Each structure stands twice: as C-alpha cells, then as structure tokens.
Image (cartoon, rainbow, N blue to C red; front, side, top):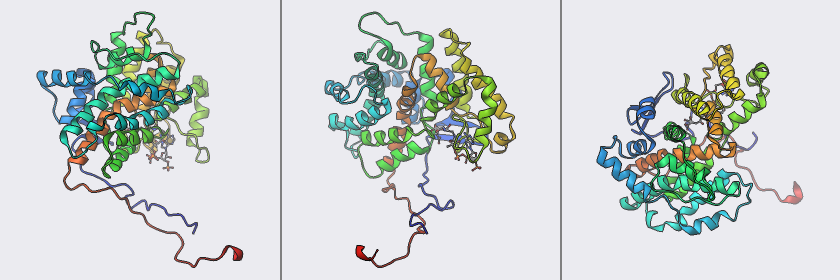
Length: 393
Ligand code: SDX
C-alpha cells in the first residue's frame, strides 16, 4: 500500500443534497432554472430577472423587478480603499488570482453583511455580490492592461455597465453597442447556475462551516478556475488557436482519443450531459451574432470549431462516450470577439455564476437540517505500526 487514501467510486466522496433551484436532465440535454427552460430565459428575459428567479424562486412582477434592479444598481460601487488593494498585484497577475483575493477581501470591507444568521445581513450580502462582481471584474481587467478604473454608471443596465467599465477610457466618449450588451447579458444567463457542479459544491461545503458569504464565493472562484471546470473556456480557445486550421483537426482528434496522451478536447464532454449541452447551442447562436456584429464572421477559429464539432460528433469514440460540446466550446470565440483577452474568460464565468453560488448557499443556510459538510473516505493505507528512531532507518 502506498500509504495514501482513495475514494471508493461507489462511496460518494461529495455529499449529495436536495435542491429546487436548477434541474438538469443530462441524457435529454435539458436545463431548467426554477422550472423555466434556459433557452426561454435567455431569449425572452435578462440577467437580473434570472438573478431574481434563482434567488426568490419565481419570475418577478414589473414592480418587483424594478425594485430589485434599483437595489443592485445602488450597490455597484466598491469601497474606494478596494482600489488600493489591487495595486499590490503585479500587472501580469492572472485576473482570476486577483478575483479570488478581492472577493474574499469584501468581508473585510462589509462587516455589516457577514452575519449568516441574520436574514437582512444575508440579503444585503447577496445584493452586494451581484452588484459588485462586474465592478471588481472590470477593475481586474483594467489593472491588467494598465488603464485607469472606470466607475459604474447607474444609467446603464447591468451588462452595458460592465462593458462600459471594461472598455471605456477617460479621454473619450464610449458608446456601448446594444447588440453586444444583449449578447453579454445572455452569456451571463447561460452561466448563472448549474446545480451541484464542483464550484457550487465548494461554496456549499465552505458555507456549511458558517464562513461568511464573501469567503465562500471566493472559494467557489478558486475552484472554478481549474481547466476541467470554468477554466475550460480559456483552454478551449487556446486549443482552437493551437489547432489553427481545419486540416490539423484529425491530428488533435487522434490525440484526444489516445489514452496515453493527456490532451483532452477542451469544451467537450461533461460529467452530467450525455447529450448536447443546451447552453452550447445558445452560445453558438450568440457567437454567430457577435461575430457578425463586430465584422468578424469569417473568423477562422469559428470554422475550426464548427468543423471540429462536426467531425467529433460523427466519430465513434465521441459517440460511444457520449461526448458533446459543452457551454465552454463556443464561449471563448465569442468572448474574444467581444474584446476580452483569454485570461478574462473565466472571470466572466465567475461573474455570472455568483448568483447561482449565492442561491445555492442561501438554500443550504436556510435548511434547518444542514450540518457542516464532512465527506468520509475508504482508508486503504498502512495499518498501525511502531515509530522507529531515525538512527535505525
Ligand atoms: C464545466 O459540472 C458542471 O456542471 C460544470 C459546468 C458548469 O456549468 O458548472 O457545466 C461547467 O465545467 C463544463 C466542463 C468544462 N470542461 C471541459 O470542457 C474540459 C474538457 N472536458 C473533460 O475534461 C471532461 O469531459 C470533464 C472533466 C468535463 C468530464 O470528465 P469525466 O467526468 O471523466 O467525463 P466522463 O466520465 O463522461 O468521461 C467519459 C470518458 C472518459 O474516458 P474513459 O475513462 O471512459 O476511457 O470520456 C473521456 C474520459 O476520459 N473524455 C474525454 C473528454 N471528456 C471526457 N476524452 C477526450 N476529450 C474530452 N473532452
């Protein structure tokens, strides 16, 4: 025995839980937020309406939506001292490294919303995180490119305000393109929640100890960063750029199938979906719209992505293992066309997923039966043995 412990596949190493927030049918490729199909929400609603739905359980009335939007709008600024926090980082720090740090640091600035047993505290913390994530994400981006931070504007809607904070500069007027703002808003909806994925389970586990909500969301951001999870959108674009042209696709398909090659088709496969990820279809549509709007509909990477998808979906390896494109496959091309560097892709995923993490955290906190999470193990290490002095070893 090597003295390590392993998880027995039949022994759940992560606690399962009851939830009524998001439903996935992996075999049918169905995704519902509080019972509403993701495509209807993405096509007919907007992100803050989806936030309300995930948090409260039902779509808001006109009055409820206006009040929710107003409360979020009023919390988009961050404490001025936060901007000094950023200056401690190297300019080339990965924006996800910055986000893990600054979101966790929110608990040092907003003590009046860290008491998890106080419903008002929790509600204020939720609004603050939804409102401030775009501001912090934009600050991380601006810091990485050496440009001054741009303050939020209350006259712009959520997605437009985010794009303005990212791409406006003090020396000239910046008009947000409404088509791109709508696409950004839809991308946020597609990433808002996804039941008990790795980062959501991380937030729940951290929250089960009673940690404050800002620290729990920072833990979720750290988990999402991994290339097998939210980091796949950055990895998928890097993969498409490495493939470079349609004629090199067979080489990479071969590598993906080779058990001895660690290469995986990034943006393909899913632990739950054994059918097409419904978000991937909506992301592909959004990709075409954005590329057309920015005059890049001939982007060769889109040709590579679509041909790669076509070949893979007809390859017996992918068919047999039920590997389909997931939400990350087309998002990289889309986000690049919106003007973001690859290092910002997972930050955008974290921005959108914050509402899902918060809704799942709140559901756990509200559960009177909830206890601290404590996954168990199947120990197969050394049996008890006597200590031996170093001289005899
Ligand atoms: C996200 O959980 C969520 O809900 C996550 C997410 C969310 O919204 O929160 O949907 C977001 O994380 C989407 C996934 C993004 N990751 C990637 O695109 C990275 C590339 N995908 C793989 O790393 C993989 O598909 C995973 C990690 C996503 C899932 O891996 P699993 O659980 O091993 O998948 P599986 O059990 O269905 O795999 C079946 C087989 C395995 O081979 P065998 O052990 O049976 O021989 O297919 C293989 C896998 O090795 N396989 C792949 C593959 N994905 C799985 N082979 C080649 N290329 C791939 N992409």
